[in-house]
Image 1 (cartoon, rainbow, N blue to C red):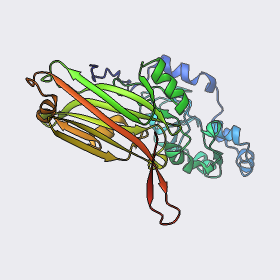
Image 2: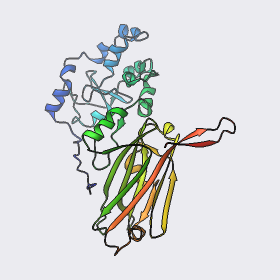
Image 3: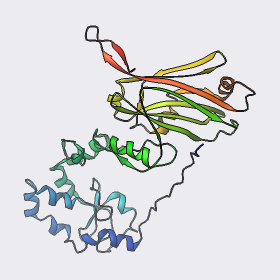
Image 4: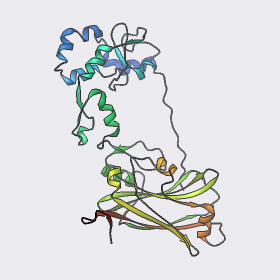
Length: 321
């Protein structure tokens, strides 16, 4: 059983002088903003070279695009509001003390820009006004997916084929083909219920990939076991599928039916919403039979695709064999 503890390294809120110089090396000796945004430059921004103007909107410290409020020092060097709080109140370019000066001219120039989504190379065709671009990119359907592995905090991102290979090769996740499953979970000491992931299994059916999670965790003061399914794709696609889970023993059984959640929703978000088959420990031990000192659960289930009935408009299940 894998531990669900996560080791995190907190990033510093302050950037030291050497780091500032490393980040701003290519921005050193920039002309003051009053020169950079001369009348000829601003007039050309009506039909700007998008690349050159976009470079002006790049923060010299973090290299991200700057959004209001954009700050500048007395010599006209700019930086974003996030980095302003991290540089000891000194300009990273000329080392002069920073005040509270807004670069209104550059903010105005940004309003005139229309830029492609940063996920253009992944297939997004959209172009947005500068100040709308960031909001779109946070929700863009072409943005990479986070790794759905739940046993550790994995920072890998990518498209679905890449993540499938990553789960198989790096996390050693079991891969299965087919839309039915029959898994047996055994634990010798069911009294030990830490927040821990037991198993992630990937299923390939209907040309799609699904992640079956099964784990033990504390729900309030009570230890529980939970199984749920996530779809490796977006939420709209996930709604085309349904799944069922069943667990039982001693002539009793629990059944869950639902729609798989997209991996856009984090594992923890799905778990904390209780959107799956939840088994209290006493019930789990009852299903296990015997002396109730060993957990033996068999979870079965299936995945099916919902199809529209062309006559009545109702969904009818498409079951794979």
